[in-house]
Length: 451
Image (tube, rainbow, N blue to C red):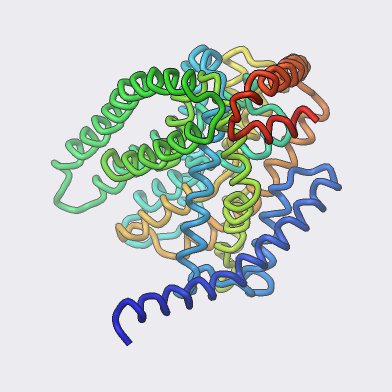
């Protein structure tokens, strides 16, 4: 048997191994997602619960650390969150985003300072000590400062408020929040390293310079690319060429952000969506991306939040610490971000929505914890406290948002949505009449929409 035959055989074995876990994830995630919808909750809640049931927390049917298929599931989940943030960027109202930019920065700043201080204080209060207590406490505070907006994005999308003022504020603040969190973590790690205090300021300066360079280069490249896509959509309107090239650029910018600038890949994906959000084809690109998300990548990503959770091995002191830190973390975001939104002249109800929307923790919190463990500042037991926070905030955020919007609906957004749906119906009808004669490859889809 030659080397190519062996590689082919190994490839088939790996494919076979991942098929059954994926089948379980899709079936249970879809079923529980529909159950959640019946209970007037966002589908994402059901998908997270599906991961909890399938993972080590309950039945342990899927082991995401399994070398035969675990890496593949984690990779699919990572692609899912990148596509979700790209879709969120495409659905962003750029004019509204620029208008609320300073407000989003202030909300993000409060969303870092308050949880960081609260997390540091709680850790010191419990008296844990791994050799450098103050730095351990600061890392825990930084974990609490991290926001995972992907679940909030999905919840707002299902509720129809992603493009609202509140939705844009949450999205923008979460992106800024992550950048501030990365700089804060870098600061804590560098000053904690013995004998390297002189290099700490240089490291922080380099990180700040990389962040600045990323946004400067992205704006420059984005402007050129936007013009190129405007030319392309005039030549090939509503064809699959545009979404494919846009998706390729999203992946490239995500890769570049993580590899060359030290910024989270989801920041690059969101920036790519922002670049294309003012195109005429933006809604068309978003529709194509959403099909992939709904059918494949979305269920895997949201289920992976539950699959990654493992509550075994927790002793009483860690359990109490986990409960306290979970409550403090969520309240700190609501108080910090909500109070700042109120100071920035949001209404009381919208301020509460901003605070609740910012309280989710997810992959970013785990990454920060991982970095702290790798640097030898905190022990692995902190992960046992982070997991309940991720589970609780991921489950409660969409539920509370649903309740808040049912009590205080945004009537202005509903009116805009009604107008847009009427305009889309007319656009699809005209497009069908105009492009049927050209034999456009998407005319069947458009015709179906009209029917």
